[in-house]
Length: 92
Image (tube, rainbow, N blue to C red; front, side, top):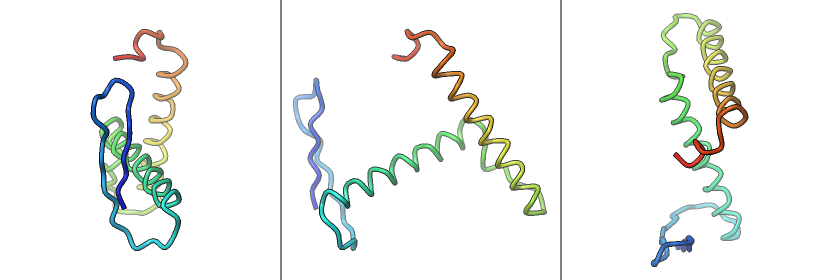
């Protein structure tokens, strides 16, 4: 399946291809992969921002607590960025 996206200010459209074995309508497949891509970006951002992958403890519970603390730090950072920073920084 081919996916063509038109963006404001760009002369040519962006063309992408999705190869899948999902048996659904093309809209459902594109929606599924867009959501998946968004989730992967959040994971990547969390790994870079708060080092969510540093789970070096030997016990599962300790690693779970470290991951929860990282997620809380990430969410507090996002809240701070959205609510407290000046609007001009939005475009950086």
